[in-house]
Image (tube, rainbow, N blue to C red):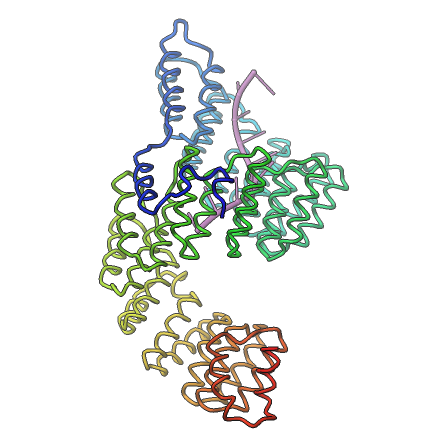
Length: 574
DNA sequence: ATAGGGTTAG
């Protein structure tokens, strides 16, 4: 990879140690608070002016502070303004309501609404939109919709496109994309025609709900209605296409947008870079970055994070280090996401000491590890056969107020089982109360797999029954694990039944499952059946993996010249 | 002429 040409690399022969040095140096940088500092200084100066400036002047300044998400600061500034006896206005009230909502204090927002009424002024559309959005942010979408309906019913206001947009967004965020779509249709039929924002909201939500084709249809309809798509529209669609393996169409969409005169932004390229990395092709991602730079766009932290993560996922942490160097060259500050990738990279390479060192270092420099950081470390510790350290960190993160999430538990149980702590894992699993955890199919799958590997096939089968009794839907991995449990116990009839049941449930076997089945059958010298499955999998376009292939090859000398197995191998090697 | 809504990250 030519980093020099990309302009990503300062020192073309950056060694690993050089990279570490730079990495530590980067941690000494602190967030750029100069902007806020300047604003606060100006604020103080304005307060001291005689006569004091108009509230409009203050609102202008404060809007900038809200933009950098300093909500509590904003609220304290308004407190000062009030103390100085400067009269405020509805704009100031609305900004304050917004800040309370963003600070997860919707109730305070409504208290301010009461204050507005008490002062004898009517709230306006912005006040209500802000409150509706506050309810949405607090995951109280039902109430948000109720408030919206009440406003319509009582004719308290005539909603504009922003208010509609807020409600549509709320419905989408709560998973009611179809309802949002209906509201959009309602707008189309009324006098307040939807603009590109409302279309974008629904298009994006359709994409996230895997309904990319419906999103594309809506996109066409919107264009026909004369609403011009913007970068965000295209970003959502490109993202949607990439997420479902439709990269070719995504690339076409990129060309289309340019033809329409919409220039792709850094974000657009980030989607592509990220998609390439997730598919394992960091090279293509690098090409996308080159294109981006050629067009005068500057890669940002997200771009670099995607590349770094792409390399780390492959365990190429030195390559990731080179990208990091390039990032530091451009004065971009790595964040916790960057370090999470690097820690993961070290863990993948079984360099747990380096991971641990980095984990310590970021804390010394004031970055706070998040759930992902800790989960990654825990996984690394298990992989390096140190279950005690893993458990210690698992306890410590909770002591520090970091709640483990579902991934943490999957890692924990997987790790415990791999380190012969199957029974402990089961005990811990039984102590869980949250439904998210006790009804997680993946968690069950991990436990079933572990129990079977620990020589407890009966416990494994019980767990599978339990999962089904709870009404949970097993996935391909669950079925695969169970089929191998049955095969290992010589219960081929049961394995077959389950295979059929699985297809009835609309779950199709994948490559891993076929490989497992063939391997288990061969282990039990069921060559006939293994051949059947081998043929079936090949017909369905799946390839035997190296383990399966080796096992098959070993059998070849023992089977007749004209055997099916030989034909299969010949076909595969042709 | 100062407020409220949409995309992108591990």
